[in-house]
Amino acid sequence: MSVSAEDFGLIRRQVRDFVRDEVVPREIEIMRADRIPDDLRSAAADMGLFGYAIPDEWGGLGLDLTQDVELAMELGYTTLSLRSMFGTNNGIAGQVLVGFGTDSQKSRWLARIASGDVVASFALTEPGAGSNPSGLRTRARRDGDSWVLDGRKQFITNAPIADLFVVFARTSEPRPKNPGIAVFLVPAGTPGLTVGPKDAKMGQEGAWTADVLLDGVRVPADALVGGDEAAGYRAAMTSLARGRVHIAALAVGTAQRALDESVAYATTNTQGGTPIGDFQLVQAMLADQQTGVLAGRAMVRQAAQAYVTGEDRRIAPSAAKLFCTEMVGTVADLAVQVHGGAGYMRDIPVERIYRDVRLLRLYEGTSEIQRLIIGGGLVRQASAAGNRAGFRPPTPV
Image (tube, rainbow, N blue to C red; front, side, top):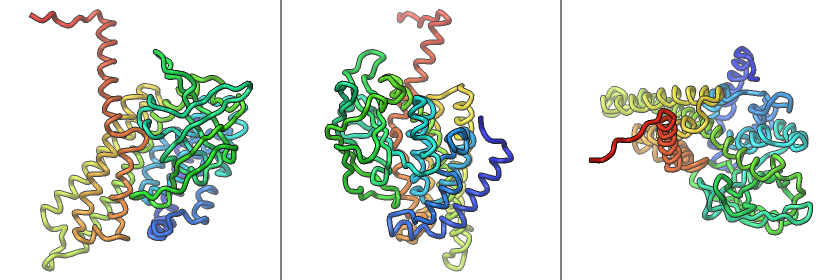
């Protein structure tokens, strides 16, 4: 059950004040140091941000997705590395346990995930298998009462600081309606699990990713999410769809920041003594930014509502993720254009935003994968409706 509108209003205002008053002034510090300062991490934990989407019975705030996206739009207003610090706890890793974990798995992990004592990491991507896990090569084999995992993961968010890895591994060859993939809970420090050096990325400084190597990693039978091989995979796919709506909302928040920076620059900087905001072509760029932000915000809210009611948990999340992440890329590009040469300078917010948002079109399913999900889903829906109605296409002449 979600928190009341009144309580959520207080939570949202607190997060907004924290983001704008405490984090925004330190964005350059975070970018240069490539880390979130300890005091900001502690403040985020004290506010419950490591568990805002975890049910209150496990110590979380218990926000549903309609509230989650409102919070994400606030968090997107600053460096995306802040949200990345606790995003997996609330998102694809935490939700796997919330929706499909056994009672024992929930008892062991969820309260510590919600408090921030445990940082979770979602280990899906690997060389040859990213948005589409069908190419997964990491293997898990039964050995008595244990499972033994071997493989390599890459670009794994929070890997250098993770306490728990939620690992995808192939347990059998795929068959119709059975992908042969299961999900395992692997604590950091398990013998055979090694985290590689921190990646050097284009943007999102402070959000750490790295390779994860699994060499004969042995875990007990109760490490299998949901207690059976099929349950964990279903859980992961469900969590990914939910996460796509969250990422869409994050993109809207960042687009709003890029728009605000553009408007501020256009009204205070001049060319030939005239504020550049008086020029119609600059106004046109601002108009395009505003239009994208408004459309994205409305789309995110509708997709979140459809997910919560169960009306659409597949097509709408992908459509929102596709539109909003593409939109924020356009808005960020226009922000640099409005700033002119200044927008290309390091330490200017729109330069960082331009780099940061490029990743949004890649993780949790690329834009191309979202198009396949949307288009394929529409065709299957139409086919199913036609079959139910006894529809037959006309015979070619």
